[in-house]
Image 1 (cartoon, rainbow, N blue to C red):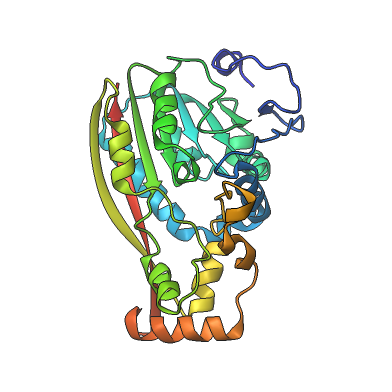
Image 2 (image 1 turned 120 degrees about the vertical axis):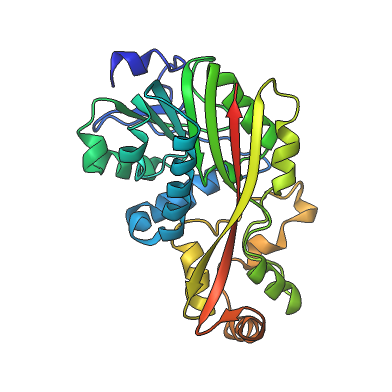
Length: 307
């Protein structure tokens, strides 16, 4: 870790409960606190998917590339540093390196960050540092980051307001941020299918686009927002479901408020029976098939912030 990057980080005592800075083979795991959104479960879901993520997350890569093009149009010059929230396996490092001399990557998944360090480009770079941390409590000093970028990560946050407050806090005066966020309008094909056959959804319902836009209100910054849909195609419904599961994105994250209202979808989310798959396939065959392919829609909100 370079000395310049080290000065960006909030000091920690290396206790196992604190976020860990990953440098070479020296790694401290973060023990995540349980909240209304089960952050530990989210981390474990992506931990399991980390080894195959790069080969399967094609639409996530498309969305990230689209976001980087927007970042280019925001006239972000070669800034001193850039914070990538939810950096994952650091697939975007090469492109992001065009915008900053130093890149700090934060992710809630320990194994994703291990893969980031195994990435040849990142591993050989002295300007890349990764930290195991939570987007809603960034272990970064206030007013220390010139550019913040995040793609397909903030949807896992419990509070849009808190997540945006953290982005605003760490940005330097005149700093800029681009946030690409998967919203609750996504996966409507599957959500409608489960509703039609009378079963609870097995995937998450994320915050809506409007929830994020409302949360951004009140910060002293310039804000530009727009949405775009990205569509993946699949040969059958099982392939569609696996495309979500294989990248860790099917993890149920809501925690029941008490034992009497236990989230039933958590109980049934581990296995889909033949009848359910058949009924879901029949519905989507008639409602959501283009040619020979079943389609799945990712609805993404792009937030451009200028402090």
